[in-house]
Length: 56
Image (cartoon, rainbow, N blue to C red; front, side, top):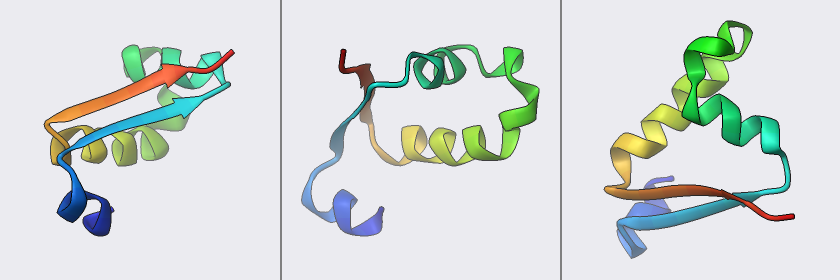
């Protein structure tokens, strides 16, 4: 992650998992994934222009 930040403060992560997108948008609805969602929240804080998008 630190290596990515050195190259660009903007990161766009893509996934084909619609549930992951839902978890990131509404983490309170997914309490069993709290630990994993904390890691994603850290990414959002570290990268000012953080995006996670769905790839069909």
